[in-house]
Image (cartoon, rainbow, N blue to C red):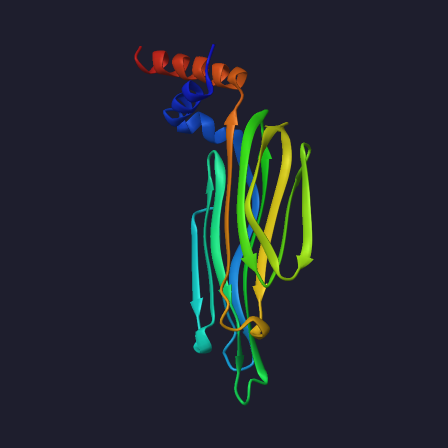
Length: 205
């Protein structure tokens, strides 16, 4: 019987096969600084590769994101800080960090989900055949040490997350840290292991 640890080891050595468990369909990842007192800026991911966006402007404003769409999961961290601008604080610069991805999960898999958020405004959702989480825009938004795990059935899933901070929260840095990991069930691992063994034997003939 394959244990979870053995499964992880097997998958680590079979990246080409394991990567087939998650197939990314679409992505929309970006950061922006907009408003009076600054030239509007935006940086976005052009494909499924790792994205590192980092925008800064005057008055301490910043919008960042570092995210990766990995063979066995998703990771994303980011910050946003807006500011009021002269004269006499009448202007406003908004900072946003946004992440959205759609993927197909081809086989049943166990998963873990970890999320930490501190933001002026935030919204996030994770939806699919076996998961339906959605939290609308609230302020202030604080979610510390959120953890969830279970089993996901095959099908299409979507994850979306955004933090938005304005001049009203000038000097307060909004942050988020998200990680989603899957481990195929032992039955799937056994199939992968058999397939990998057959591939290895063919290569040595």
